[in-house]
Length: 236
Image (cartoon, rainbow, N blue to C red; front, side, top):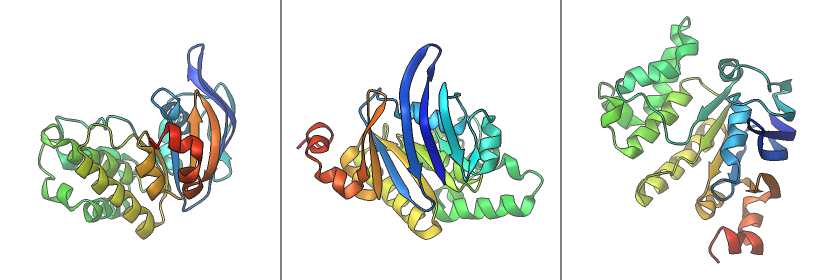
């Protein structure tokens, strides 16, 4: 479904990630772990078109997408939930979701189906549809950010540090929700996280990014058992 072949990307003259080669198949739940500053978010931004790769190829469902505008990549079937949530605080929950569903503005049936899915996944958002997003708790804002992405009815969901700033109990609830969403809808998910132990518990496969390069790639179970991963990321 998604293939990165020798992708290097960064900001200006600064190369943040180099020679990244990854593959994600349809229906997989894949982790990308690494320390702060390793380049995880840069990879997601390159996939979603927010930055252009300096070299290499990114293909989605067989079509080269690097160089495409971000809104065209959204239409192609990729949704990106950025680090920090970035909801529109002065808009209501419903209005935030409408912003996410902009691609269906001429297809009301598709919009309604997307909205019904979001409200079924996040009943709390349905209850608070008229509430301003800026007045929601951190966990509720994260739900809204994910719901806004789901409004595009993506085939691939990119999640960037969804645990950031959330209480441990809410983090566990969020990860359980990701697993349920993957299991019940078959949605393909690429999850970027610093919480390596929890991430590898819920995902199927993983990549370990260090200093801008992929150092390890294996099943999540094998990565949990890897002495290097245990020492650096799992606190063993």
